[in-house]
Image (cartoon, rainbow, N blue to C red; front, top):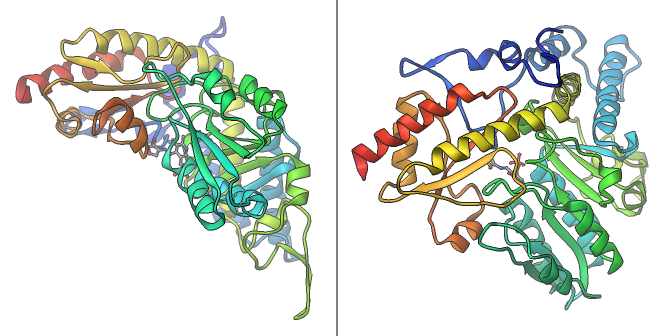
Length: 413
Ligand code: 7TS
């Protein structure tokens, strides 16, 4: 309990850090400062233990055998589905296990959207999307003669809501937008936008890959139609993710992939499909991954997403002030509502050189286009340096970051 709340709703970060074995190592002789959490987060013992326990004790396939291990595996896998439903505020049979946010979006693009698209129809995305929330829609448009439209943003990296609304027409078959931008940190007012879209009869998919680990998310309260996330950014394993979708949509969707586990009965003439969510989980799923993700959301709920949000917001504000005070730094993404992402460029120093100097100092950041090339093009930069924070980061990590940035300037600028 001491590792959880340190009273007053604050977090005992030192205690929580002890839950993450990978944080406690030296890189090039310096203590690791891990600030690449938007790419992936480290895993707490609760997750590592759940994976280990499954493989050592319960390992078996799901939904198939009557033997004890298979029943244990099935109970744990379906138990994880319940944990995740509770975490997101949805119904258990609205949770589809997929590989990650990318696969969740591709599933909606292929099973929901594509059969509904006609030449002349439109799919609306925003100017700040990750490639995973652009390319699947582009593929669906190219195959059907529909068109991709883009809702613009301001220089600060905030969506222009009037312009977004003007792009919602009776041609629009879906609005797909990110909850939190991975390149800018912008938190979009998703509930308000969903209401706007629904007033025009447009269903809404939200890419939650950068949101669920930073703030309480309730898909029912948000009022959206689809919500996609990746387990590995949520302190869970790689290779597992979730599509939450309203059951009426899942019921209406034909399968995307066929195989075992997604059928009710098969003859060579005709196959009856299983009801959702299994209809969309063909083949042996990532059983251990789902169980690990269940353990991750339990762990996070134990700490409390409100507490995590408050801690990370405090940290982001302090880091932003410190980094912005360095001569030659230009922040990329200055929205009023941001979560855990600090993107910037430094005059005269290439982001990759900064990344190298930081790594020599034990500091892990992301440098590059962050799979958001249209965002880079919008700001006229090839790449940024991105520091992204998790619940286990703390203020003492900001000073080494700033010192290393000065060192990079001394070496390269
Ligand atoms: N959507 C957003 C907003 C993302 O940030 C990412 C991954 C994805 C979708 C795709 O997630 P995946 O788990 O299916 O690959 N973003 C990043 C990043 O910012 N750095 O590395 C991966």
